[in-house]
Image (cartoon, rainbow, N blue to C red; front, side, top):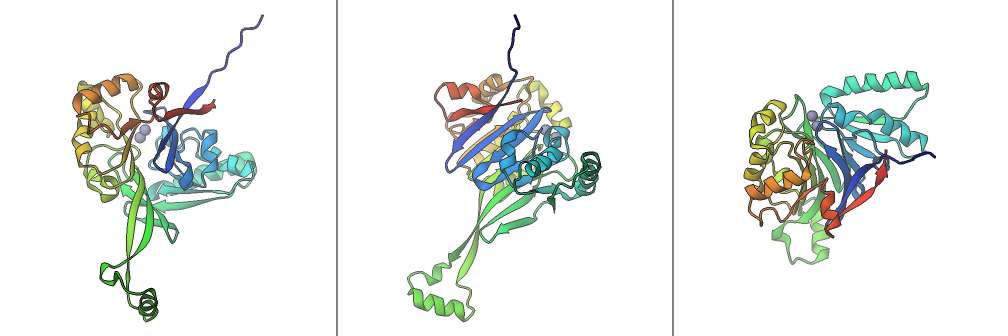
Length: 300
Ligand SMILES: [Zn+2]
Ligand SMILES: [Zn+2]
């Protein structure tokens, strides 16, 4: 008799407002987070199946646990007849990644189509008139960046309120600037980052949904957080009251601590009301309690 079982990896799926957040994030192991409705995946981890449906991949830095699956993501999209992937990448990584993909072209003996968009902090890559992706400098490795998905709206200036539509159309035709541009950060993903000015960036403070790492929770891990340029929970709790975000999702928790203990420590450090909108991506326990989490399926 053969004893048979399957080893599976669980991915998380949260529904927060209008968007789902699907992903996996464990420090040093793998980080990949998708917002399917916005056609974007942040970092690619080992390129799990679900991320193929995103046409835009935003890579924050070059560590293997965030980038390993890049060539596979592009190749699989091509193999499955999907739209070629567009990869937003820190500018200084572009020549190295191009070399990596050139090597894969030789190894696979096929030409996988893709587009690379070099990004630096502050640059806005507009995909449509009403939507763009902005890079934000983070504090991890040299050139590391986070990303904000920006809804771009044209709004009528208050001084024109109440004027008839016909008059407004005439003014517009005459070249008068009757509208102003409003940028709304829908989702901001910080990738790996230590503490620093990024937490004062308006796209971070005002993001509707903020995806932020918090790797270390133990009080004797403060130096470890500093050395690895990661966030420690004691820094996070100082930042939380300043954020206007509707939802905050914590990523990249160290396996050494684990989600259960991380939740326990966080609850001891911050007020209950401050934590009302704070979720752990990898909190599968909450799904059993009937929370908003659900298992997003299994993969290898
Ligand atoms: Zn990492
Ligand atoms: Zn890293």
